[in-house]
Amino acid sequence: MANAIPIISLNDGNTIPQLGFGVFQIDPKDTVAAVRKALEVGYRHIDTAEMYGNEAEVGQAVRESGLDRDEVFVTSKLSNAFHRPDDARKAFESTLAALKMDRIDLFLIHWPLPTLYDGDFVSTWKTLAEFQRDGRARSIGVSNFQVPHLERLAAEADVVPAVNQVEVHPYFGNEEVRAYGHRHNILTEAWSPIAQGKVLGDPTVVDVAEQVGRTPAQVVLRWHVQRGDIIFPKSTTPERIEENVRIFDFELDDAAMERITGLDRGEAGRQGGHPDTFDYLPA
Image 1: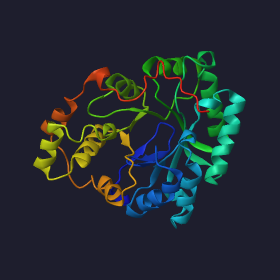
Image 2: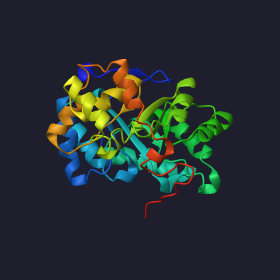
Image 3: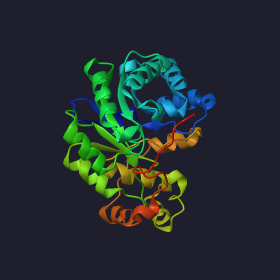
């Protein structure tokens, strides 16, 4: 299956597997087994974060997989607690130490936090650019950035984010942010791609799944892939982990794609916090 997963080019010349495995809300004690299973069935892209508390277990699973380090694309994200440049530098070193890696493939600002740190996420971004220049981060990007946040980076910084990881699923297409990314060669990564399971019982999704002989989850993940976004579903159930990677041997026709896209509820469909006001700081 690893050979079936599309490899997409980033704007900095690096590449990224379009399908990854997410470990958000996976307990550290369950993370090693889940990631090892994911790697066994073909995933080659693992998405973690400092605030998930399971970076060390992700690193352990990669080491125990038997795969060469260069075969696995690893992403992590800066904790909301460490946006000030010196704090960000220390946090990045802690990420590498937890993973037991000398470099990371992609490092993101997890949230812009415009109501905190005097609204200054630009200096945080410029600090991430240091990690890319010294080779410890191959690529850098952002997460949960709205169009005005991205426009501010474009005006005040030299480096364009390689990706913007944002909430996207059939109930919340986040089309304005996706369109900005498309225009400026910033790839969209869709977190919560199945809206934490809420879209799987939708009559439209169920009907499309029945028509193509696939599960609702496979249909929704395939919808994302055909739209060109990067996704990383998460599960601790071995059968689900394998099910979610088997989405590259069928296609949805235009009518099915339009039906699923038509489920968009705009802001009413957003499941997570709004990036303009989200201000969570871990204890």
